[in-house]
Length: 324
Image 1 (spheres, helix red, strand yellow):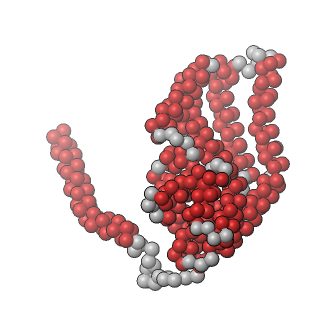
Image 2 (spheres, rainbow, N blue to C red; image 1 turned 180 degrees about the vertical axis):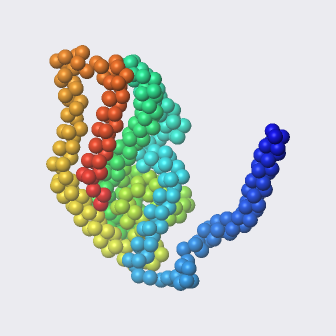
Image 3 (cartoon, rainbow, N blue to C red; image 1 turned 90 degrees about the vertical axis):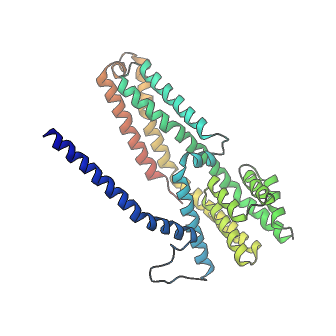
């Protein structure tokens, strides 16, 4: 009986291996053909065979914007850590980031063990710290860098417009912005100028710039330059219109920020209130809250409270922050 079971299992494994090899050799030509079609750009053609050769300028800009967003999403999915480091403007390798994450996780676990938390809870705190804290730090630095870039970008476009109207070449205007503009606008334009001197194409340089600074304003600027390079026209007038649009967007963002400032203040007060009350109770009666740290049930209650509080803060942040 045992021999029959072993033979049956062996035949089943052999059959599965044969089916796997057969499906591999059957599907491999189709996969290769699909990849070659993607490389040649034939996958964007509609099923009915129709394709638009030359549309309006607005439609080309919208198509280019969608293409840049799709490329950016695909690259961020492939290497999210590298993209976060680039957007934060840090000169750090992925290996250093992983070592820092491990160090943060070990420190979080050690702190949890020092306050007599169970090993399971301490491990969860260490894992959460290792994954969440470095990523949140990168997101914070990158967000602050994007805000600073957006703040000075419209003024840089005005410098570019005035330089083109006065007869200076575009490359010289970009070099002036790279020298005179504050960070991070100056460094981004400096990289753009240096890349052109080294022989890189404008499309590839703008694509790399979007990886470092994925803001809507920079996307608009990249699209305008690429469309202008293909179709020609009055670049100064186009950039002047873009500068006006960016200034209006900034005014709208400031208005939204002012209208939501009361809700943000309320959320900050609600989020900080438990920590403030715990600190005051610990000062008045130090032994009152010690069961939360010394007892197993208290550890679970503390961990659950932090989890629910984090969920509430995430919901409030989602309700307050408006994407524009």
